[in-house]
Figure 1 (tube, rainbow, N blue to C red):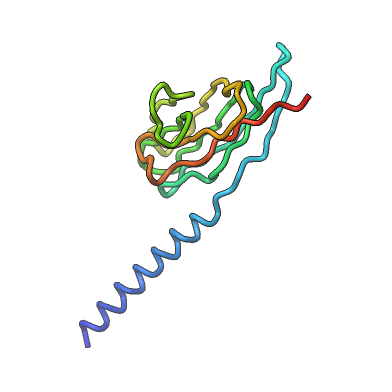
Figure 2 (cartoon, one colour):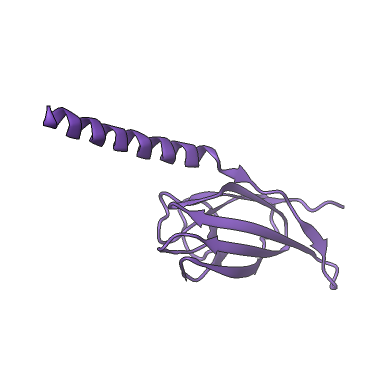
Length: 143
């Protein structure tokens, strides 16, 4: 009888953990652009990105080509995370942008210039690349 109780509790714990992971994976979103025009006439975009439970809260980020990008990074984990952008999922160097590691919980602001060539690029945490990644979409700017 005691063995059944231990098995039942273990099964319940595994089931709850699995449901939380699935729920978290299903809540990833894409970005909504918050663009402004800088004093120099270029486009600026600001994006909030959260790292929590070993995942990003966005699976896709879209920016105008050549925009000045600000990533307001909120690492809610007690682990270090990064934000980097590469030409594709092979993440070969040179990177479009490689951010420093942020030991959590903490916030950090990354700034960089988006590629001028429209297309789909790849972003990830360089420390946890298999679990934390997504599409970085560079769009033709509105004219």
